[in-house]
Amino acid sequence: MPLLFRWLLCCAGRLIRVRLPLSDEADPDEADPLGDQADACLEGLAGVAVMEARLAAVKVQLAAGFVAAEEAMAPAGASPQDRTVRRMSVTAEVAGVLTVSEGAAERLLVESAKLTKDLPLALGALGSGTISWQHARIMCDETDGLAAEAAAVFEAHFLDPDAPNPARGCPAGELTPARFRAKARYWRERHHPVSIEKRHHKSVEDRRLECAPDRDGMAWLSAYLPADQAAGIWNRSTAAARAAQGPTESRTLTQLRADAFASWSLDPAQGVDGGIDVPSPAAQVLVTVPVFRCSVCPRNLPHWMVTG
Image (cartoon, rainbow, N blue to C red; front, side, top):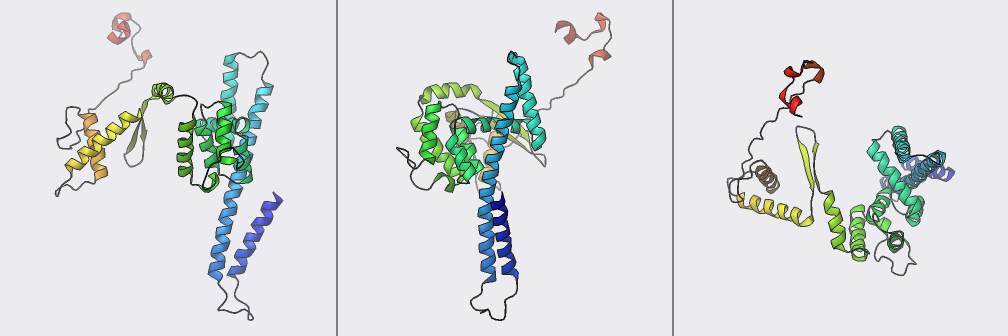
């Protein structure tokens, strides 16, 4: 930590110097206070990025250490139910300390366990500031489901320059997270020990449809589908949107694509060649009646309570 404080003081000193007025002996033609200030700010941003990565590594080790301590304190003969309760308690404790949701805390604990146990090179690179926390999370995502040996090969390919087949081009930490994820996923698909057919058969069981409310009366509707179905829906929506474009159409292609999808979902009888008019959804009213409001006498019970 003292090194970090000295570095911060150095950056602050540079910023103060570039803001001071020039002395009488300084040549105003050679001085560039704005350039010096820009350089100092960029250097500070680079240093902050390294500090954030190192602090993320510290958080990972603290989270993993907390879980290890709680597991060591658990009774030896604890039942699976008791272990599940202790795991939920650990997640709730971390969520409360970090002021995050329990889902975010659970993901942090899972990623911390994976980094400390299965990805030592990634944790070391994170601690040295070579990669960012986003890169480390991508490493965890792309090694999910891989055996320990395959994960070690995957990790060495991107982080070990002395590996038999190291990654070419820019180092992993110098790539944007999106670009690094693309490269990591491409390598994983090519070297995965399990065939794509078996992995797809397993992943297709997780297909789902989700709706997340957003502000201003909007919402996000997302679907996790097999790739061929998702591509087919996208291509059909795009074809209908392009067919609806014309001199009198004021909606953009993006808006037409969304309207086409909504119209087919709310009115399946509408074809691709028809106009894109989004119908109003049917209203659904749910009435909740407290059971204690009903009469105790069986003859007065509602029909749905009698028949189940």
